[in-house]
Length: 238
Image (cartoon, rainbow, N blue to C red; front, side, top):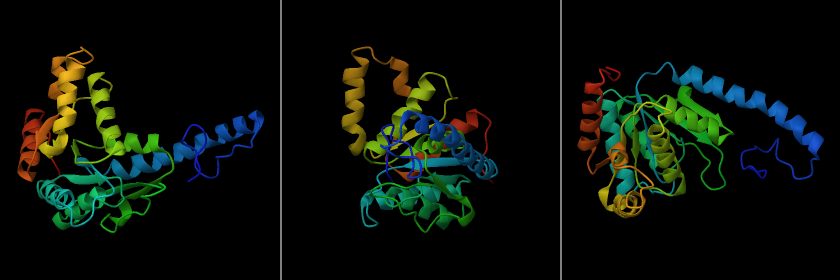
């Protein structure tokens, strides 16, 4: 995918040679492509019921402990009635969809073309694979149709999704939902920095530390989700 200076335009729109008049025309027609992606996402995902979005590194291999743990987390979530939403690619995304498929749960893939990780994985339900050109449309789908985030070890993209969700909840732009960080050894340094730097400098409030939950096993993930929604009178897809 070629990118313009805003980093969002697909090939058909990206060009450094367009003058300002041409750019304005392209930007106007771009709205229809954006609307089309929203419509497809809304129509497909609004029908499938409670799901959990799973994030993590696209570079994890099928033999990696993180990959194997994710399969088990997603499988157990599926057995408890939750569908699984991932970014549709390899690594942790593939593991999440694989676990969902093993459990017979909805397996959603929100795929986007990227320079390194752009092939969707084979464990996505055929009718629930959605292709996106725009990151911001895809982000809406991750949040709008998820009853929780399960965040496995990952890189910049994983951190981006995590902190965006925390920000939306902190600023009350969306209702609070469970955000579960899996693998305490991986998240330890990040959480220490949040507590010892952000909190100490009063960039966040003490209550903000309650916006996420740390887990190490699939059982802890499912128990926390079920406990959260038992208080909110919400049921998964049984």
